[in-house]
Length: 172
Image (cartoon, rainbow, N blue to C red; front, top):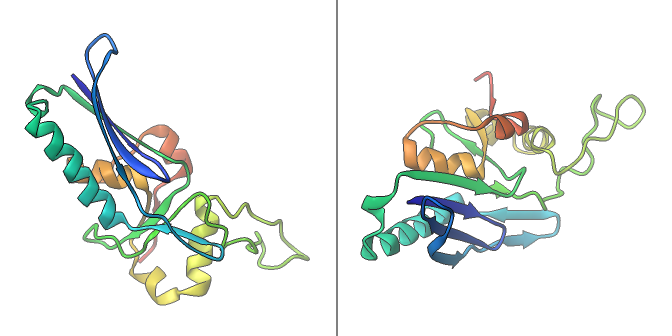
């Protein structure tokens, strides 16, 4: 059996498939999204609480011991900062978060190109410009699916597609 954990902007889902791809069981739990002007955030601690509820549900159905693989997916460009001990220091900036809508490659409109506010690097630059103390405390910048993979493995891991969106390791 194979478990797919899908973290969306509205919910986290656990779906179990058999070896030929037939859906056997699923569980869906709402995730809160906090909206304040251009800030659209989620709480990474809520992800883990809800994920544990899904795993508990599957355990009660006697599914967990039969799992061979786990796959984790999430919305693109949902970014969060972690400490050197891999503890979340920021909320998750979702793909819909546009607070970084005035970040340029060279710092201003005359010399630089406007960066896409949904991209991870743009969000990191915004954090550095607007909360340098928090930025300095963040050792790693990862996306939300990699945070769930961290829960399962105890390590920072990603796939090549997420790597291209990137895990950013700061210099401090």
